[in-house]
Image (cartoon, rainbow, N blue to C red):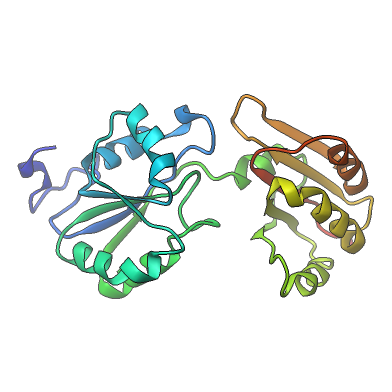
Length: 244
């Protein structure tokens, strides 16, 4: 994109840039299959002044695949507070910055919220592109009602975990959780204690990848199944709500 296209008065809605002020783009990235990125996301990543990535090594694989050569800088939970105001200043001065995570949509169990909030306070434009988020395909293919649901992300490992599970035991909406492979079986066993052994669930792992698996059944059936195998990959657990 040349300088005239980025200039003031540009009303081309097909362009990722509109006007001369800075803008933060939240760019979803594939959760597995590299083909799941959108054409618009590629366009934005090729045109911004800077790309922020949760893990630059992981993101470089995607960027190299699509021949994207923009400057790359780390942005994660360990440095976001330190560099937050510096980024807002850059954006306020007219920089176009894209924020991407290792996989999925920024701010969904990944860093982004703090930067978005500060940009809004500073009057910086923020635009989130539509794209991949692991819990959506997991919910849709679970066979569990999708009309009303709550996304809980990763449960607290210690403090507040039991209190939250007790509260969720009365939840009537479908519930969605993220979990690590090493804690999957323990979490399913806890769910049985709070939700009952017969509560329907679906565990999805390695979504969009070669070894994608969706195991459906009661909490007891699914827990027994995963006890007998080595679990790898990203995990999404969908659990039916309480029936009144």
